Length: 168
Image (tube, rainbow, N blue to C red):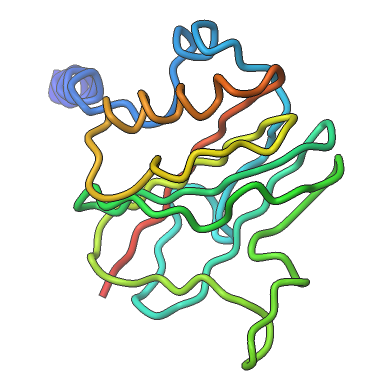
């Protein structure tokens, strides 16, 4: 009976937890096509990273196009990491090896606050002009509204989402 109680409690709590990512209903409403696959940080979805560690994100595109990568920190601060990067079909890793700084290859460092950060990868078949989107603190609803506005400028579009956890 104890096992059943724990199982029931787990099911109830899972049903109450906020759902991350894009729902099937949103995929249909936004007219998304299956272009992006395998989007995850190098330690897997939900992987733990200590502050100041480097993170890389891998994904595969089934067709050429433009991708934009945004992050939403645990405090809802939203930042564009990459915008309208033209890529061919195939496997890719952000940051790109071609992205270099004076110190060498560009990196994404895990920075405060600690907790779970969301990363949303947007694919479009054309470059999108949206300078005012994905800035500041956005609620999940605002993030989805801005994502839909961004994607509406393209005929072929897709979204993938993953997470990582920043720890001390």
